[in-house]
Image 1 (spheres, rainbow, N blue to C red):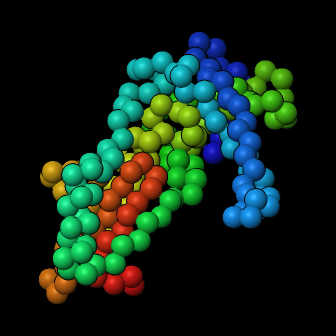
Image 2 (cartoon, rainbow, N blue to C red; image 1 turned 120 degrees about the horizontal axis):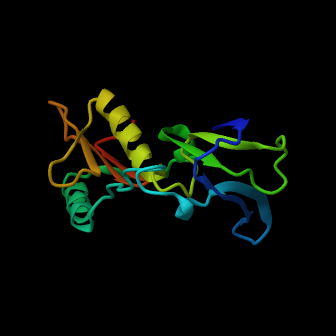
Length: 177
């Protein structure tokens, strides 16, 4: 996710912070404590720390069409959230980030991010590029009308469809297998 490196001269350093959350069950009992390291991407400089920020998300009209097809062809629908999606994606620019409070690193050192941390401007964009490349290797292609909708055509059955909304996705298929 990062390397600890000496503070680089002449580079814009972005801040960071911890975000803490208590996950509760349906009865209000505490299920687990969560902590997430967030980059303060609002301090990033375009052209230096990032170039692209756009992440295609499924259009409402595309989702409406998919649900009509789902009903008409009796398709299965499954929704999922990709856990730690940004942390699975390599960054395409050098980003240096201050260590968050209570993070023990040597004086004069900083974190060089290797993976997309939540909060970075390009995190969603590099995630989409990596994810769409992975889907392509599995035989999925984005539709021309909506680049957040991917189809895998099969000669025997209705095509499998994946809709994306940043790190959430809908899976539509004739069977759950």
